[in-house]
Each structure stands twice: as C-alpha cells, then as structure tokens.
Amino acid sequence: KKAAGIAQAFLAHTLHCDFFRDQPMQCPTEHAWSPYADNGGTCMGIAGKDYAVVVADTRMSQGYSIHTRNSSKVTQLTDKCIISSCGMKSDAITLHKMLKARIVMYEHKHRRQPSVVAIAQMLSTVLYYKRFFPYYTFNVLSGIDDDGAGAVYHYDAIGSFERVPYTTSGSGSSLVMSVLDCQIQKLNQTVATPELDKQGIIELCKDVLSSVGERDIYTGDFGEIFVIDAGGITTAKFELKLD
Image (tube, rainbow, N blue to C red; front, side, top):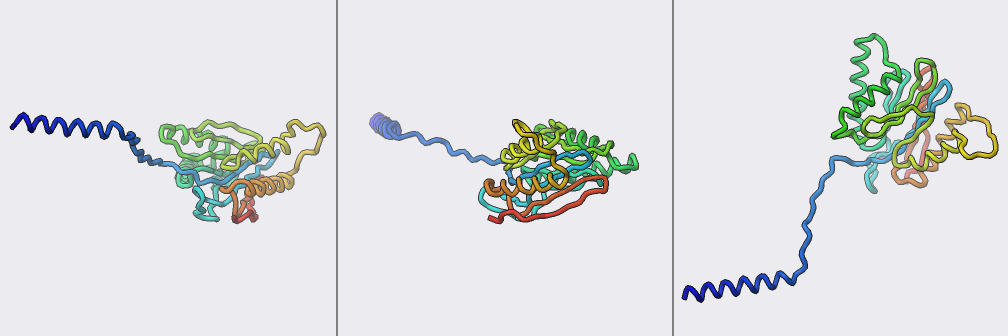
C-alpha cells in the first residue's frame, strides 16, 4: 500500500512537470524606480564685450503633463551673476539654495560679493562633490567678470565646465545651438555680416526661443530675458506658445 502511494505521487509529479515544460516561460516583472525626472525647458547664455544675456522659458513639465507655466529656471546669485538650470526642478532648487548659502558665507568672511570666476569654480566643486549621486541639473552661469567683460560658463551634471562665448542647455538645446553657431560665430558663412549689438542679441534670443517652442513640447508658455551689465541686472518677459 505504501509503495502504491509512492508510485501515485511520482506519476502526479511527472504529469505536473510535463505540463509546465510545454508552457512558455514568463519573464520576471521588473519594478524599477528612478530618483530622477527631467522637467524639460530650454535656456541659453551669450557673453558680449561688456554684458551677458540669459534667456529661458518658464514651462515645467514631465512627459505630456504641464505642471506649471510659470516656473523660472533662473536665480540671481549676486549683483553681477545669475544661474540658469535645466533638468530636474527639485535638484535645481536645492542647488541654487546651496549656492546662495555659500555666497552668504563668503560675504560674511570677505566683506564683499564673490566674482563670477569664483562662483564658477565653486559651482564646479559643489557639483563634483555630488558626483556619485549627482544633481540632475545642466547649468549655465552668466555674469560680468572683474574686467567688466561678459562671462558665460557651461556645465555638465558633475561639474566639468568651460567658459564659452555662448551656450545652451535643456530639452531644446540642439535646436538652439545651430542658430547661435550661424548668427554669432558666423561659421561657414561666405558673406561677411556685421556683428550683432546688445539689442540684436536680445532679439535673436527671443526669435530662437520662439522657434524652439514650435518644435519642442517641453519649451513654451513664457520667456524670461536677463541682461547683465555694469548697471546691474535688468529683466523682461515675453510670450511663447501655450500649447
């Protein structure tokens, strides 16, 4: 009787194995979570002889959802320096707060505001310090240096930076850069054209950002213009597409 029970159990196990051998194997379901999100938007910075211009849009979105139409990407750090950050908005807010706190510490210690060159190096240090869990921000730092010349710095997420005559960051950066190469650097032009003055640069930036808004769904709503010169920082706002 015991032997019959063992035989019956073995037969049931064999049939069970034969049944599942013919079934397709199901892949394991991956439940992934990312600490990062890209909230879109586009910014650009251009350095002139004695000024710098920064233009950025105000849309904050994720995927096909617009969270808000009035979220500035730009923060004023000193009387002659501003930062614009694209990428993850919460990381940008945290980074800007960190920079402002360290600038206050610098002012208490040295009794003066740090130069744009000093802030550029400090921003690189702050980003590199977080290199193993980076701030998901792509920054453009702009201002006037100690010689009175316009300065624009471009950064990656972990602090590698370069002083450049113009740069762009964000979801529409690939659309912006080609126009700036053509109109400012005059690359591959066979006919000489005059250099743009300050007002011409501002109008160019407005046209570029308006064009990006036509192609990039993450850029739109409103554009902010920041002009930094010896007199300080002046701001203006213009409309972009709302859809």
